[in-house]
Image (cartoon, rainbow, N blue to C red; front, side, top):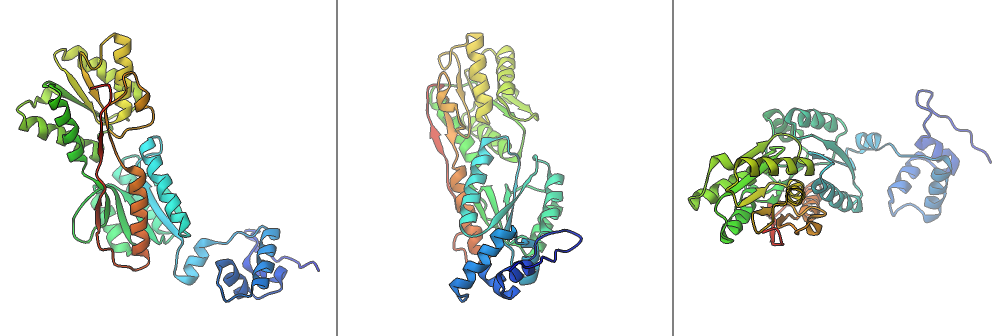
Length: 341
């Protein structure tokens, strides 16, 4: 028997009612069968699923959320997709959330507080079940939106013990301090710090470098190289040439991201500057390719995949209304010593 379809004229979409007619069941049975409720007879479930596949039915999650008061979407705000750091974070987040039946609405903020506010306003219109946002620093309007939305929120990449705030990450400043201490332990005294992008986390690493050198009596503000341009291999090469040209006496450079340090190592090869004999080079994040450089790059390995998984697990608990015993999870970092120092 062929069941005529009655699609809404405005959209032409296959509706739940169309599936119900094709399967010869009620719309509520279709809804329960597609949600996987155990109370539905298996034979009916099979009929409904077969009809849905044949008709090409795609559920409308927004309508379902409005009807049930429950959403299956989680909004995720990250600074960029061109950095492998956030790709690793996002992949772990999606794996964890999808396994629990949730989908992600991804927003890219480009390190712009105003853009983050706009994206959050747009995503809150979809009534997400939860929020994952990168970092702790944002404008007051965005903080107010998060607080007043009533949507559970977990902050990624930074660890904060602020009451009422949930976070998974590590101390960027402490990590910057540790790699600087390591360079000092290798006898380096004139250590420059090169930062690009100048996002809050890069500046925290810079602060760790400042603090450590100040404690050692070696801090020189003229050895700070700050460039607001996006971090890249090409920029790292240019920064290395500039630093060596203007400060020939330096014996170490801490780059706040691995792509900068990779560019510096390539520039050193091109210029004939021996690393680490003449100058030590260190990076941050242990990005892909750092262990293949010549020499291999000393860096700080950051647990971005673990952060994505742990933050998603924390958010899942919050969305279920469960008590989270530890609202601040500090996953630490690892100093990876290789040939460049």
